[in-house]
Length: 332
Image (cartoon, rainbow, N blue to C red; front, side, top):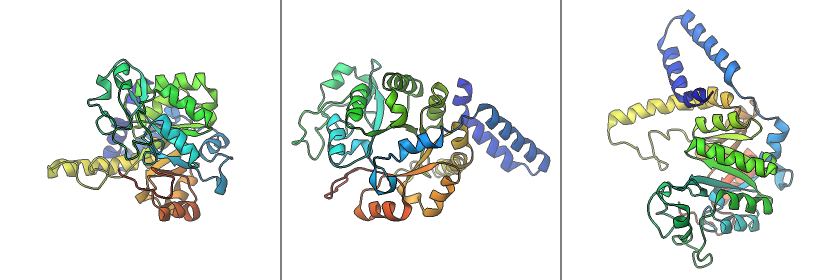
């Protein structure tokens, strides 16, 4: 089964290329049948809808169950991915927090968005090259605009963050960007130690392999795929990732395949309960598309008052935000 998880992307690309490249109705039918058999044999079903809804639209949330999730625990209101940010998110009315998972050189799971500590702390270098005691010496509020309000904040462990969220009754979105085996193992420990997480947390990732491995390790965990169209060929601000026109166009082609796979294959194979999409690509029709498949849409990152009102009144879906206060000033 591990080979299935590792080969998701390759299978998808090969299948689509062959299907699009053949003009034979017989071959098209055979490949379509093969895909069906593959899904039947290896897919993980979604968790029961009532459980998924309990996590994604908590009954404690007012306004039709539209959850407001603090992105990076609310990185504009307090130093991102810290215990202070978790407490501030609760104080400012968030129903949940999104936390980013990384690992130190000695294998300790900690909260950190970037692969390095340079942007957010007074240290430098990759997280994976620092031992936990070295990471613990750093000031996680050093580069934050409100550093004087949160002096000396430390990089927390996954364990500390989970306990803080449980204490404040916050839903957790565990964002896993890499290290699939280590992340799944660490999260399994958390779920076993804190069973309340089954009804109060989501494991999400841009990498389908991570989600598949998580469902494989524990099918009862609520999961979500994260997606931003054109992410392979363009940066978040829309500029091309690669100077070479040939490489840029090749990545654009892969982007098209990846988008198709997310919407027609991978969500079903992994049995996700939610789809986390960059806000610019969400519309009422898009929300309806996923609703028909029993999948919730969550938008990111929604920061202005106008955007938040649109999500509340028109789209009626949950969203992630960097800031919950009225004087929102996102700096990402």
